[in-house]
Image (cartoon, rainbow, N blue to C red):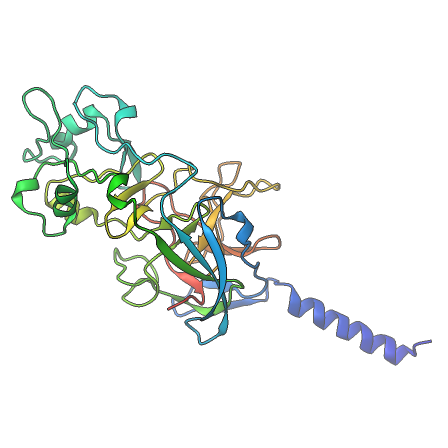
Length: 330
């Protein structure tokens, strides 16, 4: 039989274990940006969530904080859960099914014929004239045109072209990603490489990708919209929020709800992939249409079922998440 002292010590020990293994409201640490992140429970990556068309294996890796661990190596090419394209309509009479979408000031616009016809009004600039007297839209037709028109230093020869790079240009291209099998939370956020736009936690270090969808497609950095529009070109995204760069492959700039997602039983937003640090990425809104009101500067927060995880930005924002609160592969 235990003495009263032993009973007390046992109770105190059990309380300590519970406190240290579960995140509570006291598990909050201020980072350098004066935003709070809950440091506590994390959920391991589930490789079975990646769908057919991706190859997943385990390799040794070292994370940005020096942690020697294992990572999932994910190899993929193009999505198998939805078609890619279309991007550019052919004529100003074409409906929305003939083109993709454009992201502007937080809004998503259908790139149909009428959108192309009204670009001069939309941007209040008469230089825009992306179609001929028959209403036929100027669209890049070759891989060389795709490469030249997608160049940040695009020449005048491609002014007023709709840039369309097609899947045939990347049929031999595969991409390889590494994410930690067990996420490792950090005390402060990490910026993304080459990021801009004034969002919190962005700079010149860190990973370039935001994360990976379950179909193996990259959640990419913000599209360089200013460069695209400055050359009087348009490079639409398809309805899934993706388009093609011959070096980068097919990649997403917006989460539009088309790629594979995993519904949550409790009404929480559906899961759509993993961030570069291994934490889950979920849609912006919960089933009731609300966005969580406790997101930190990186667009992450914590709950008991999912541990620390992120919610993507609105589809029209040309953004997924702002930074990482976990260690990543350099």
